Amino acid sequence: MGKTVLFDYWRSSASYRVRIALNLAGIAFESVPIDLVKGEHRTTAHLERNPQGLVPVLDIDGLRLTQSLAILDYLDETRQLGLLPADPGNRARARALAHSVAVDVHPVCNLQVAKHATGLSCNAEDMPKAWMQHFIRPGLAAFERLLAGFEQTPYCTGDTPGLADICLMPQLYNARRWEVDFADLPRICAAEAVCAQHPAFAAAHPDQCR
Image (tube, rainbow, N blue to C red; front, side, top):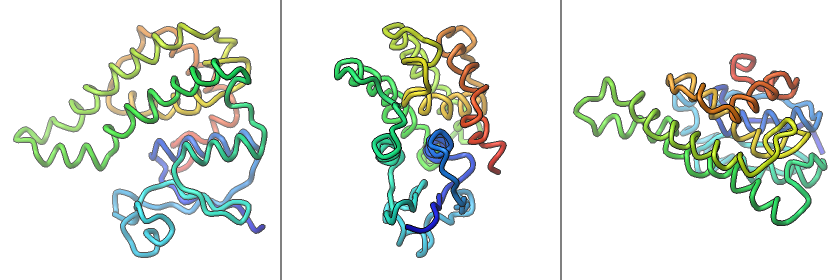
């Protein structure tokens, strides 16, 4: 099948998610950096890997996969990671919790989106942080309320790391980067503390991958 290769960027939330899952699965992988700041995602070589020009791209099992949530599903189904509860109702609720960050908050806080918004603003210097804070804080507050429907034992939706934890941690990294205060959200803080102690999460942290 060949080696597993992850084309990623150290600060990419989507790449961060996939690194966590690969670590949880115990899959050794080669990381090939795609520098988004330098525009390497728009090169011909990368567009051949992913016509969207996005990261991550994962070469695994003879496949080339894109879109982090699809990759997480693949790893969950082929490596039995148990990222979602077995009960269909709880499974749907846990997926909604994860998607509240990965589908709703993350896209509008994508660096490319924020830069475009900054370019349209007459107050461009202050725009990036204000833009990020405008979307991240309400998204985390909603996540906190959604978490109330689960018993944290000790992860977001159970006793092992799940999809919600994998999506939450990169967003909290971004929150700290853009000075978003979430200290008053105890459920999120508890999830962050336990995930930070897990080797798979610690090894995937951007500071370990830059």
